[in-house]
Structures are given as structure tokens and as C-alpha cells.
Length: 210
Image (spheres, rainbow, N blue to C red):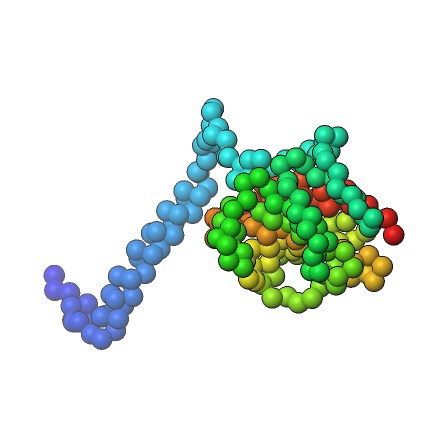
């Protein structure tokens, strides 16, 4: 039996229809399979019998209360402050700061100085450092307390790596502690994080006499 000519002749419409079906049918099949799998898939829980602990990047830092009962005391006619035996006070008179400490591992390259190991802490009382001077190099600021008043703990990378604990700029409470740490250590401010609780305890042991 001979087929009608309309069924055996290739036309523009038949070409377009064939191309459309060629593209559409695979997508339709994929979508149908996806919907079927989504309706029947049951996830298998993964049970880890021996979980691997993630190491703390700052292993010497704790959230426990620091015991200061064995600490030493630095005192003059203006203030007193407690500090651990591993901190070495620099009591030489200075027009720039009230007191400085270095830890027992402190080293620098003899420059500005650029610290290569350990840390150096400066105490400033009524010298303007308790105010927020500028935002140069400020990468993080956290609200905290210092001597029972509002304060800020700021990490600064301008001219080194410095952590500044300062009061809230109140005229009657102008106090700041600055810890300078190695600027090239990785991760940044690792030394501070390892000594953070001790640093805060030293700062909050300050007692003014006037």
C-alpha cells in the first residue's frame, strides 16, 4: 500500500518538529528519572565511631579564671599592678608610657623594634591612649570591660601587630594596655591569643592611687 505523499515528503515543518523532539525527549526523560529518584531515595546515615578531635589553634589559651595568688606586684606612688613571674617589668622612667613588660621569650631585631618572638606590653595612664585615635590598620574591635567600665579590645596591623585594650574614651578613665606581637607570625595574633586571659587579668589588676 502506498503511503500518502504528505507522509513521505520532508518539509520544513517536519524538520523543525524532529529537531524539537530530539532536544525535548532527553530532557523529559532526565526530569522524570530525577523526580522518581527523589521520591524513593532514603539517605544512609554516616556513623563515625572514632571521631578525630580538631586541635585548638591556641592550645595554651583557656576560659578558666586566672589564679593570680602567686603573681608579683609592681607598685609606685601612682598605681599598683599584678603580673606573672614570666613577665619582666621595665621600670625605667619614660615620658611615653607608665610601665612596660616583656615576657621571658621576648626577642626583637633591634629596630623600631620589630618583635621576632614573644611580646611586649605597655601601660598608658592619662596619656590619651584610652581614646580611639584613628582606624588605621584596625581589623577587629570587641567590646569588653576594663576595671569595671566599658572598654574595647582592638586588633591593629598598622606599623606591626598590636592589640590595644582601651577604655571608652571617658575623660576620667583614660587607660590603655598595648601588647605588641610578632607581625609576621601565622596565624596573625597567635601570640596574643595564647596569652589573652593572662593579659586581661593583668590589665584588670591595675589599681590607681589617685
